[in-house]
Image (cartoon, rainbow over the protein chains, first blue to last red):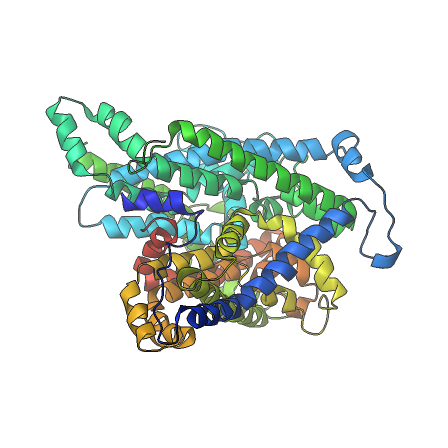
Length: 327
Length: 276
């Protein structure tokens, strides 16, 4: 199963390079190759330093200061742990933003993956329109992150939007979803789930790799559809499920655009859509409290890192690599 | 599951998936009065006027916003494709001392939540004097020329792994330098991965909002997504039609790319993490 193996191998460099043969001897060729490698890598190395590493260190430093953009860097004050202390104790919105983000990720991500897997299973049969369906289901993943679509979404879930008139067909009176603090976040979750196409495409690729002999053998042994799904499809697909779970979780924590559009940048109604990144934007770029926002960013980084590690740890118990050597 | 019920289920899901998109098209063609009275898919009266009034709604025309967006996305495509290609070649084909470590770091940045870096990058670019100048796009574009989107590096590396190594070995025996191998062996064969990179770069940059919101402060410099948020501020009933019309126009380039390269996009996703 090459599919699955590669996802697992992602953290290793690309294949062992073979020894090169050169008329001028291996030493010269090797040195020449090393120089060439760093030359090819130079834009990436510069980016790693200037766009990623240095800003990260800078923000770690700033998170212990009261930097506000307006005062020059040379005049900022060291405040110790004050930003972190304020964040965890007195900031009235911080924990709220944490819980909004967590509930968004914990609910929307599993549902999105379930939808993706379900539709992938429906599509995993050869028939003529498969390509068309696959393409059309994928379309929302391309459009869904845009401001334009968020605008459409908000209007669809207005008090007199299309969704309520659909409910009215069944005699149900809907809520003013996007303006109702109990429902605003849910409409954003639905928007996220609506974009199930990207993980679906990955599931489809994974399903193609499951050997059909396994199903044949199982049905000879009298296993029904559910048992085949439970004991063949799910285990064989677990590396792909894991891959999607990690990507979508990290992605889910960073939802910004739709929340910004729904609330016009405030996180409302009543802070119900105050995603962590939106709170960070407000603290950093509206209130210009960059030192504080840097502290928020670092906590975010650490937490997302920890969650990724936990996912990888728990993955050991349920992800099966069919070609893995016994460990 | 029998054939017909499978198809029925798929068609139902398709209806749910496409409804918001078709509804957007329908609403953009309704008159202001009809938007309030008819939330159905099909307008009773087709009124193209929303497009004209949306286009000229603000002091700067949407034509300008579209040009700005096209320029940012176009340059991002060039930068991403070029810089990620170079880095990917080194990772996929060349031997050097820190290869393992650097590759691991590259994969690490793939998992790094990008929004964390927004604030420190802003501070850095501001210190360099790039924020709010005559041409405020440097902070948006420079990272693309420095291969900061590890996803694309990874995608191209994965693709290059599939190119038979015998080809470069033969060239090496013939005395070709790494540069010649890159130029004459790997580059021509990597075209599919580069096209995928280019398409995704375009779509993602075209849709990107957070960064453009942060760095663009002058109306004439706005890109389409930032300009669209201006409609949200003016909440009057009459602005819904124009807002939908401009939203629809903003999605057309992405949609055209999708239609033209549908197959490649879907295959590209598979190549990214999964094909061996």
